[in-house]
Length: 214
Ligand code: ADP
Ligand code: NI
Image (cartoon, rainbow, N blue to C red; front, side):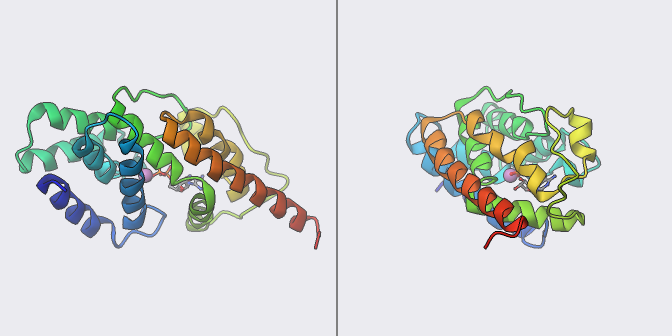
């Protein structure tokens, strides 16, 4: 592991350890590990991938009054303080700036390293872990887990997505079930297929229980 990666992991761990909305250090840790697994099947620059994964949520827009660019700025300041070369800082900032879903589903990630990190971040939003995170987030927001009268809203604008009062179950239809088809890499796609099937099984069970089956 490079010194830059080491120092960045330590800084991020300290910053995120106290955060309770699903953006905890362990989310970052899982994305980091997933990104390394995915990068092995690609011809990607491992240091850029690892730094992108570690910094990808450094200043999430949800916690900073909607400033979409603050993550990239903070990453740049941090990497400059460690003396990283400008060209490589740019590669990491590109990842941090383009990582978020924010309702649009538009893919502006240009670099291979960014595509790897994006796949890793998306994988952590689906499957067993993703289901857990979805319910934790819904509880944190104070929303109910399901309301049959509140239907999922597809194709929301960025503004609508941010202000939407989503139930946990609607979030599956508004985001989680869409992620499989947005995967960039072969390994990412395979992993997403597995996690996606598990979510479908989970939803079937959920709705059967909701209507009083077994
Ligand atoms: P990420 O860091 O994976 O891009 P987000 O910031 O979009 O994640 O959200 C953090 C976690 O909370 C994810 O697992 C995501 O699916 C979940 N989440 C985000 N928005 C909602 C919502 N409106 N309802 C339920 N879960 C949500
Ligand atoms: Ni993330």
